[in-house]
Amino acid sequence: MPPPIPPLPSDDDLRRLVHFSTVDGRIWLSGQRMLLVHAAAIQALRRELMSSIGPAHTRRLLMRAGYASGERDALLARQVRPDASVFDAFSVGPQLHMLEGMVRVAPRVFDLDEAAGHFHGVFQWDHSWEAEVHQRDFGPQDAPVCWMLLGYASGYTSGFFRRPALFKEVQCTACGAEHCLIEGRFVHEWPDGEQLARDYDPDSMLVRLDELQSQVEALRTQLEPADEQGPLLGRSRAFQETVALLRKAAPTQVTVLLTGETGVGKERFARALHAMGPRADKPFVAVNCAALPAELIESELFGAEKGAYTGATAARVGRFERAHGGTLLLDELGELPLPAQAKLLRVLQQGEVERLGASQPRKVDVRVVAATNVDLEKAVEEGRFRRDLLYRLNVYPIRIPPLRERVDDIEPLAMHLLHQYAAAHGKRVAGFTDLAMTAMRHHDWPGNVRELENLIERGVILAVHGELVDAPMLFPQAPSADALTLNAAGQLESPAVCAPPAGLYEALQRSGLTLDAMEDALIREAVQRAGGNLAAAARALGITRPQLSYRLSRLQERARNAS
Image (cartoon, rainbow, N blue to C red; front, side):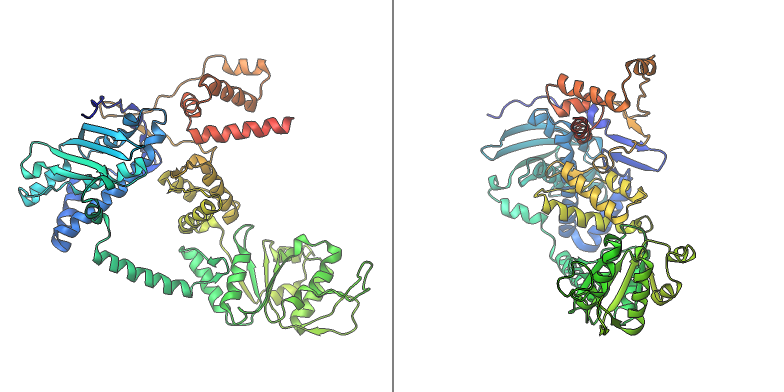
C-alpha cells in the first residue's frame, strides 16, 4: 500500500521568485523570462494547428512543448528547496504549474524508491485550461486532450529525477469526467514505455524539415570564413558586413589591415582570411610585435646570419622566410620600432628580405596581414609610425567591430563557449537562464570576446552540474533589478526594503573594519551558524548559493594574500 501523501508545502518561496519588472516590461520566474498570454490566444493557435496539421501532429507537438517547459522548471526545484524532503522538493513542479495558471494539482499517490528505480505518481487536475478550450472548440471528446499539461508533467519529472519518466492521462473532463487524472512511472516500469516515448519523438514531417535545415546550415557553413578552430560565429549586421569584406579580399593578394579593440579576435579573422584564400595549404605565421624585445625584432622578422651579432652562433631564419608562400600576421603592428618599420616597408614594396649580417637580399612570397588596436593616424602625427608605411598597409582596411556593436552575436558565441568549457572541465551544463542572457546582452564588454570567454568559463565552474548558468555566476556584483512580486492573495506588491539598523555606519567607523572585512565576518558567521550548510547560509544572507560560493572564494583569496 502506498504511503500517505503529506500536504503540499507553502509556495511562498516560489511566489518570491516571480518578479514583474515594470521598468522594462518583463516578467521573471527566477532567472527565466515568462509571459502572461491570453488563454484565448493559445486557444487560437491550438485551433489553427488542429486544422492545418491535424490532431495527431498537434497532440505530439504540444506534448513536446510542455515537456520542454517542465524540464526548465525542474532545474529550479532542487535549487529552491535544496534541503527539503524529496516530496517537498518535487512539489515545486505541481505548485509552479498552479502558479503559472495551468491547472490545480492535488497529489493522490507519491510512491518513490530511487535506489530501486521505482516511481509511481497519481495527480488529480482541476480547471485544466486545455480541457476547457479544447472542449469549447471541438465539443466532448473520446480521448484525453490535456496534451501540453501532460508533456509538462513528463518533462518535469524526468528532469527532476534525471531519468526518463512519462505520464498518461487516464481520465479527462473533456471526456465527461469530474476531474482530470494523470498517472506517471519511470519509462522502464511502463509495459508500453517505448510506445509512450514515441509521442515525444519529432514528427516525420518535422524531422524532414529539420534535415533540410541541417543541410542548408552545412552548405552555409562551407561558405563561412573559418580556421582550424572552426567557423567564425556571428549573425549581426556588423559581423556580416565585416565578413563580406573579408570574403572579397580572400582570393586576392592585397595587404589587409585589421583594426579593432583588444579582444575582438583579430587573429581569428586573419586565420580565416588565410584559410579562405589560395594560400590555405601554405604556412600561416603570426608574430606579436609588442611581445618581442626591441633588439630582437629585426632578427625575428627578417632573420640573421651566423655572427651577425653577439650570440648569433648559427644562421637564423626570420618569420618572413618561414611564411614563404603563405601568410604572415603582424599583430600589434603599432608597437613596431621605427627602424624595423623602414625595413618592413622595403619588404612590402620589393618582396625581399635581408638578413642581419647578409650581403644579398632573399626573395619572399608572403601575404602580409597587419593588425592593431592603435590609431595609426594619430601615431603618425606623434612621430611613432611612418606615414609611408601606413599608406602601404592601409590599402584594404577592415575594422572588426567590438562586441557591444554585435549584440546579436552574443548568444551564439556564449553557447559555443559554454559547450567548449563544459567539455574542457568535464561538466554538463544545461545552458543559460534568460536573466543571464539578458545581462550579457546589456553588458558593455570592454574586454570584448576575450572577456566573454573568461566570464563563460567562470560561469561553467560555478554552475551546479546539470543546471543553468545564472546571471550572478557571470556578473557577481550586478545589482538586482527593482521588481514587483506576487503575494499569497495573487496581488502584486513591492518587495520589502529593510532599513539598516540605526547607528550602523557609526559602529562600523568605530570598529575600524573595512567593507571587505565586514563582509568576510558576516559570511563566516552565517556559515558557522548554519553548521557549514552553504544553502542555508545563503538564504540567511539573502543571496544565492553560487553568490555565496563566489564570495567565499574571494574571502579565501584575501586570506592567502594577507598571509
